[in-house]
Length: 104
Image (cartoon, rainbow, N blue to C red):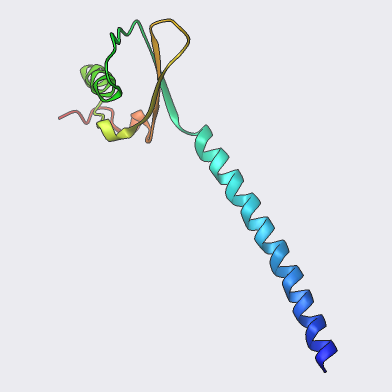
């Protein structure tokens, strides 16, 4: 009976390991998909003059709001310079189309 129990436990362990591996791979795929679906904006001609990241976020937020689209600072998840030119790339946590016409 001990041999049967050991064999059963071994089979269960193998099956559990396969399922864990599959779930882990699916989670990695979901993370990669989520990264692809971030909404990105590129701003040209931005003078940063040594501004802190928070100041750049506020500047870009105000620029977007001027177009009539409501945007909160918390929705800007990344902001970074592209090359040596005056370009900033941002990633938004939600679709800008969700905010069109909702400027208060």
